[in-house]
Image 1 (cartoon, rainbow, N blue to C red):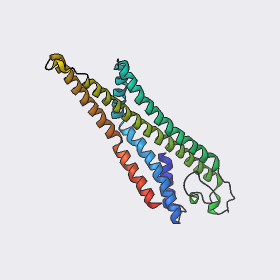
Image 2 (cartoon, rainbow, N blue to C red):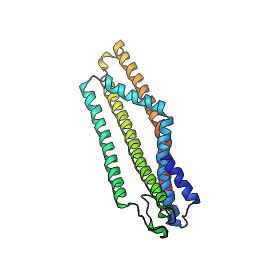
Image 3 (cartoon, one colour):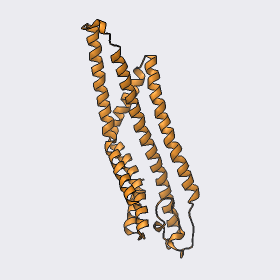
Image 4 (cartoon, helix red, strand yellow):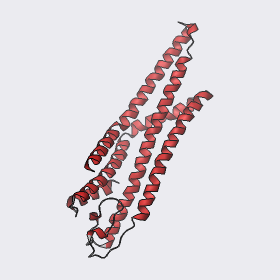
Length: 234
């Protein structure tokens, strides 16, 4: 994805795109790839924090013993899987449609610029004067980048949704746990122990929430800003 984004940036700077529509189409494509690159690189740089978040999530599942608590966690996990399925169902048909409806157009070398197509981006990225093998390499590199970007988007968004839903479930469990503290034993050592344990768990969840926020806040901000800029340009 990084290679395709760099190549497209060079094409935009030194290529054959001149009209406003072509430039907007090129910028839109490069922005989409850039977001995929940002998500991949940032998650890689934050892998230690992400590993801690995943380990905490696994520990919650391993240590749960109450059947009602497990059912509540399973319900939130179901919504997470449903979100992932919706992401994939929305992504794969689009990729398949692009793959089979925008096949390489092997026009003659002296054909017009519009004669050649690209799976994503303006046709000016494939001028008719360039050799066929260069056109095919460019075409399939962009197509590969499109697939990579699509799955990076889907996986990152589904991962974020799953973590946040798990966090919501843990807060629900903590609320239920606090509600079970017996008022009749007011001031007893066991009640104090329960309150202390709930406070510790609350701090753990706040730390968990802070780590999840640090993982995705800049990526989410960039995504909102990029989408807003593209809407304005369009």
